[in-house]
Structures are given as structure tokens and as C-alpha cells.
Length: 216
Ligand code: PCA
Image 1 (cartoon, rainbow, N blue to C red):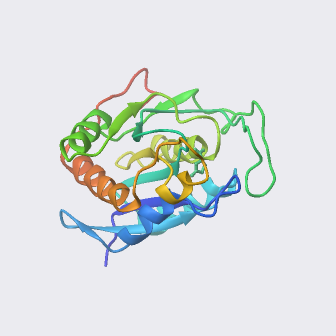
Image 2 (image 1 turned 90 degrees about the vertical axis):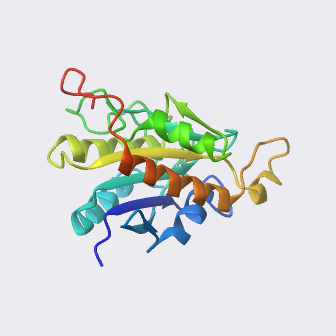
């Protein structure tokens, strides 16, 4: 069975018992979306290793679309990220204890890449389905931005047909219990949102095209 859509979620980090990104991605393994089959893969919340593992899965599956999904505790809606920046600057240590500060991800890489997902169309379709969503102009400088940049770099350096992007998701309700006042979104709704994001990507062009050659 050819799996042409790669969805990744992350392992728990920062003392959490679960990561809603993986809880939402996991049930989509083998799901069929408009005739395409999904591969769901768990990624380590570890600088370096996350990109290496993603690259290995891309090499194995040769997918058409890669959507990395991560937890953004405190955000109130599904955030479709627009831009990955070439910077690791960790507020907390990753799951291997590393805390890079002000370091380039790829020393000779461009400063940034735009997502090659149709960001605005995804937001539109999520809202039409009754799911709170918005575009986001920063994926932060921790492991999510790191893997996002890595996926964009893979596209820029050879896999031109690959569409890649990152979607940040709020805490699950179970996590929000321990963060009084923090917004949350039920995991099945996040899974539904990811299905919509894939379907929308299959049907829509990239919304930011080449800018100076480096930013797409
Ligand atoms: N969220 C973190 C890394 C792993 C995850 O789920 C982030 O936003 O960078």
C-alpha cells in the first residue's frame, strides 16, 4: 500500500503526560483521504534527531505531502503555520536535555522558508467545518519550528514536488485540567481538522510562491 501523505506528531515534552499532536495523528494511520493513504509517525522532541527521523521517513515513503503537527499550549485555535525560520532558541531543554540558544538549524541555509501548504485555504475550510483555526506567522524557535524548517529544506534541496508544513494544536482538555484557564480542543476534533487540512492541500495550490528563490 503506497502511503503518500505523511503526518507526524510529537512525543510529550515539558512534563506533560501526553502530546495532543500525536494523540490526534495516531488514529489517522492508514486513513484514506481522497484516495490517498496516510502514514502516521511519532517524532522525538529532540533537536537534530527530529529532523533526522523525518528525513528517514521521507526517504522511505517518498510522500507527496508532509504535515508535521505539534502542541502549542496556550493557543486557542488550530494554528496553520506560515513560516519556518533558521533558528534554534530553546526556552526549555528538549527531551535529550539540549537547549540550543541562538543557533542556526542549517548554517548555510536561507533565513526562512514559507510553508508549501495552502495556509489560507486550510483556515477557511476548518472554519467552514466549525473548527476554530487561524494562520500563524511564527512557529516559535523550539523543536516544531526546527522540524518544519528541516522539512522545507528537504523540499528546497531536491524534493521539489513535496508539499510541507506545520500545524500547531492547543492543549487537549485533559492537559488543560492542569493549566487552569488555558484553552483546549478535544483530540477527535483535532484529528478531523487534520483530515480537512490534507484534503484541502490536495485540492489547492501553494499560496505563497517563490520569493527570491529561497523562501518558498
Ligand atoms: N511542540 C513543541 C515541540 C514539540 C511539540 O509538540 C513546539 O512547539 O516547538
